[in-house]
Image (cartoon, rainbow, N blue to C red):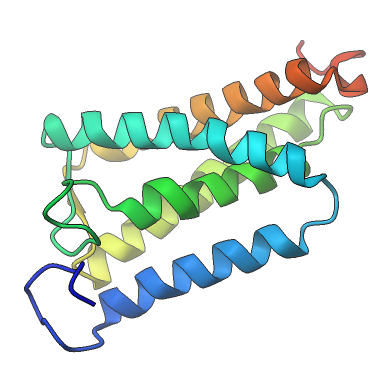
Length: 172
């Protein structure tokens, strides 16, 4: 437990329970997802990590977000669990269930639902825990970055595996 910050050292705080739960839920969610092969899950996971880790570092450097309680507090100012495990697992699910052959309205609704759930999770963590604190402007940046990163990874997945969902109206 030495990899958590000094605040509340030695205690199993709400923040630590959330971080441990994020690991457990993310790993179990990836194991139970049968819609994709392990090769596809791994590619999506790594691709989302690229976006979330890079953007997380940028947001911290520009003081848009702060993670007072985080794992590996000496090594980085970014919450490792959120950006390297939880968000990529959510990105895998985004691509696995993306309604590519559906109408534009349905695809936009799917994107909006993921972005809204993401922001709601961030707002709940910011309000009720000390896992993060951010500036009000960050909410709009977060919505755009979630939409951009998940859709970019989804398009990369389609291209890399030459999925049939490229045909039709998937990119219109």
